[in-house]
Amino acid sequence: MQQPDKITQYLETVRQQIRWKRAQPVVLEEIKDHLTDLKSALLEDGLDEETAADKAVTEMGDPVLVGEQLDQVHRPKPDWGLFALTGVMFLLGFVVQFFIDSILKGTWTFEQQIAWVGMAVIVMLAAYFADFTIIGKYPKLVFFLLCAITVFCCFFIGQVCGAASYAIYPLLLFPTAFAGLVFSMRNKGYGGLIICGAAFAIPALLSMIVPSLTVFFLLGVSCLILLTAAVLKGWFNVKKLSALFILYGSTAAVLAVLLLMIMGVGYRADRVRVALNPSLDPNGMGYMGTTIQRILSHSQFIGSGTQMNGYGVPVGASDVLTTRILPEVHTDYLLTYLTYEFGWITLLAIIALFAAFIIRAVILCNKQKSVLGFLTSTAIISTFSVQLIVYIVSNLGILLFSPLSLPFISYGKMALVTNSFLIGLLLSVFRTGELVRDEAETVAGRHNPFIQYDNGKIIIDLVQPKSS
Amino acid sequence: MAIDKSLLTGSTTMLILRLLEEADMYGYQMIEELNKKSKNVFALKAGTLYPLLHSLEQKELVTSYEKTADNAKVRKYYSLTKKGSSHLHAKKEEWKVYSSAVNDVLGGATFATA
Image 1: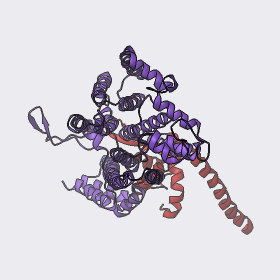
Image 2: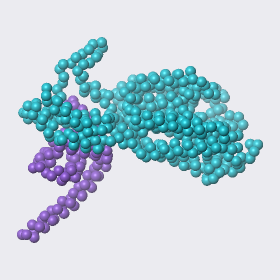
Image 3: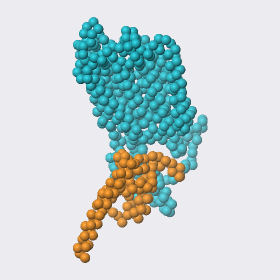
Image 4: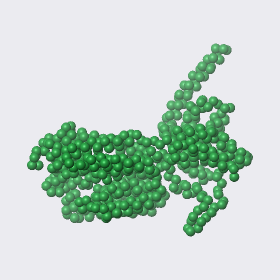
């Protein structure tokens, strides 16, 4: 069997020219298909094996030259726009935290945050160079590992203010793991859809145990987006309309039950009403919301806000606002504070920055050829966006969901690291996405391994199908 | 007849896009088709074709998908995008101007000597 070696040798030479390892298999596959086609055509013309292989290789052209040309085409393509925007967010967080720290004096928040920025950058780079397709290759492993970590954080790590706050961060990774799970349900029909729904129940339940309504909301929205996207792509191989009907029908049913549970208890219903309209109970449950809206009503478009009375001291000096009125300003109410201090324009500028990032990411996400790349980036964009939206809304005084974090900007070490990881992974998808193929199904029918292990038996297949 | 290589590369893009305008094809098919259409004048080497196709794909002039062909083999098919189609039209116009200019000069010379 000399003939295949000619072709193997040729492919090996081409492979050596392509520096980007991840591009090699994808590119070589196509060249190999071509060579086999060419060879079998030549065989049909009456040439013998060896001459056919020789001729096929010659007609292909110099392997070094071919490899070099392919190498030039296939280079990793980092998206510098998103990199720059991420850099700006990091920098903005840095400046804002420095500024707040200088007012709060002696809280050391800035120094702590800086130390964690270093950590966050390392995590981001690690995620950036990691192979995100692991999510699609071992979806169950990833999913259950994440479950285990979350459960551990829920029950074995200290609680903050009566909530297992550390469990929030692994929970933020769930939509991404869920993307891998959805990916693994290709052609699995309604059963696949149901498995996804059941799997969603696990993190949803965990978010209730924390408890964090915000995380529950984030998970719900993200997973719903993922399933909708997958259904629309025909991933489950079911009728799109009926699948969407099932999906949204069951979501509505779950929401209705939850709403009944919430509204059935008097004080909870009141909380919801007050969250939407804080002025109903300005000194009780609506206190925070009323205060925020009052601060905002004293804010100007540009420049610092006008004086507010009624807090014992006239509010004008920045330290009064931060130390007496807005608790945890560097974590939860940065936007309210910045709006009062520097005007609405600051809020608009920050929203514009994040919007630019999200829009760019969505454009790149839609360009993904592989469903895995598409789903993974969708999950991350959604996790990022929901955090942002919840933060903005709560900083406008509507405290239906308490803020988690303003990614990269608000104070919070774990939030910073978690978001850095997610964005690193997102950039990784965009860097290598063009090479990812969703081969799960086709490979099975295509490769006929020489040795198979099936149901306790080792099958050695000596009759290999001809490569024609 | 072997045609000078540099003459080919410039117009190869145009030829490939033109092929894909008619139907989606995989690489091997394109070379066959090109041979047939050009009566073996454009014996495009596959080694040249794939890097070119891949760069066209990155420029979003073509897009690719995998499909099982008649013989149960999975092939990477290429298809022309909207952007590719308008690029092709621009190239065609360019080519018309260029070739008519060449013909004018060549034709003019014959006329003068006649």
